Amino acid sequence: MKKALIFLSLAVSVVACKQSQEPKNETADMYEASELSQTMRDMVEYSKLVREQIRNDEQVSPVPEHIWNLKKAEGTRDEHLEDAFQALADPYLEALKGLKTGDSNAYYYSKSIAACKACHSSYCGGPLQVINQLGL
Ligand code: HEC
Image 1 (cartoon, helix red, strand yellow):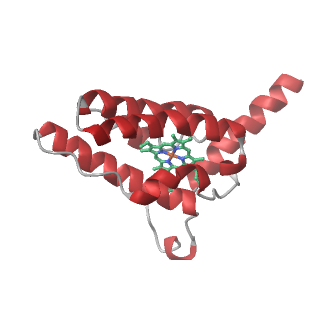
Image 2 (cartoon, rainbow, N blue to C red):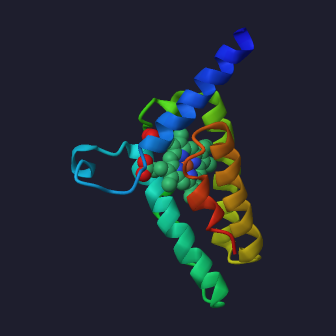
Image 3 (cartoon, rainbow, N blue to C red):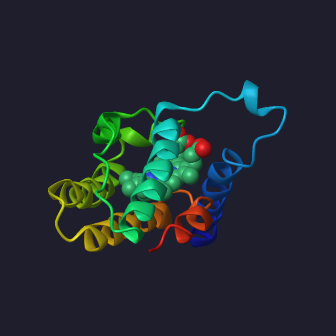
């Protein structure tokens, strides 16, 4: 019974997160994205840009400054205060540091996307659909 409850609350939190990122509609204006949501959206855009640059054998753009502050960005449900969140953010930021050096960009880019997946397997699963499309 206890196990079922834990499972249920986990399922609910996954759904709650998914709702927050449904496609834009007329109520989207009323929903104010958290700092963390906004950072995530920028991470998606930056990933798409880098993927394109790697595919075209171009130089990779520098990481937007505020993405480095990921661990301090306030989440809708204060996720940024949780140890699990902090721990899962590290591999992502580490992967980005690899990109900065300009060497082995494809390797570090793939690592960064794996880090998105790892965190989203623990937190909200909704964005996994978006993340799965970011592979090289
Ligand atoms: C350390 C954990 C963590 C990592 C790493 C992470 N995310 Fe997230 N992501 C979250 C959390 C928590 C939220 C919910 C934020 C909120 O609701 O305030 C979120 C929200 C999102 C959203 C929904 C944003 C919205 O519009 O509300 C998208 C899309 C997303 N992440 C994509 C990504 C992508 C792509 C990556 C990798 C480039 C990534 N995430 C890496 C934890 C993470």
